[in-house]
Image 1 (cartoon, rainbow, N blue to C red):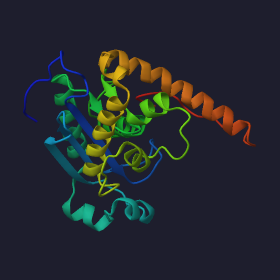
Image 2: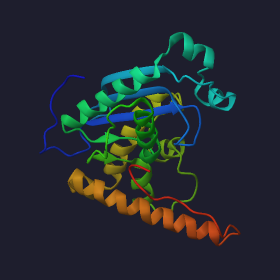
Image 3: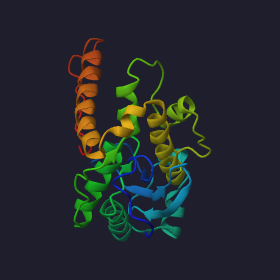
Length: 236
């Protein structure tokens, strides 16, 4: 992707790279990428750059997954890029954004980045390892508005922060909405804008761990004594 370099003097939320995957399932160790989006949004949330992929995952896409993102096995085989090629291109696009100094926004980043990491290993690519400037609105929202009731899905976050999401579970729509939610969280919590993005990344590591520990304690206290939750972030 091309474009202006990110100014270190600007708020980290002014220009953001955005990233999302749709996949064959929810298990990060076994699921495969079906669609992907890497883009850039500007200070007003406008889309400045975007690149999208449809991928032939090399396996059957379960009906349950197709019902979520709309891509059938047949369509993926017909229109999709070979998975090994697409995974390499997605990693390269993210690496290019990171090299420009752009924070990378992903909603529930530990899922998308971990899936991409497993896919890199599967095809023998150099992984996109632990980028230092990940922004995860899912983790940040739960930290700054801890006691808000209700779901914390992307759809729910968009409703709460007044961000339009017209096509949920489309990788492009979800990626762009996640970036706009991150910007809306900063508008609602201006102190976040003054935190260096590297420091924010480190805070999210701690917040994710604390949130997982709290959730695990709650589940164990409600009849599931063996329940465990991983708070590893941004990779699991």
